[in-house]
Image 1 (cartoon, rainbow, N blue to C red):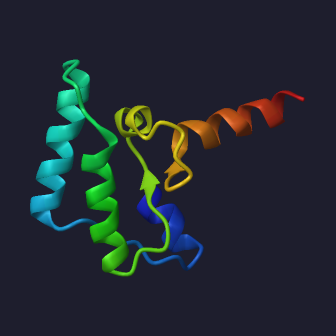
Image 2: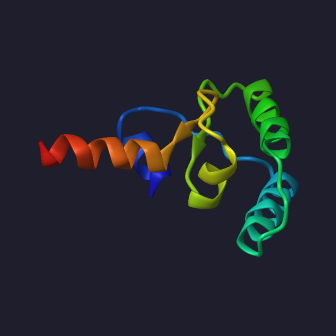
Length: 90
């Protein structure tokens, strides 16, 4: 969903390599099962993406938004959605 939306605005999307996607899914499933997951694991992946040319990191999974702890390092889709709902309700 995000990929198509960004590309429609001419924004290139960088997808993590397969091994990083596996690691990311492990983090997501750990969060779902209530395991202690720190933001550092996410931060390391973000740094790798920035090293590949990413200018922004979109947290497209709600579980990842939870461990981001309000960091301005990411675009937190839950926060974006909440802001949009508040604006629409005014």
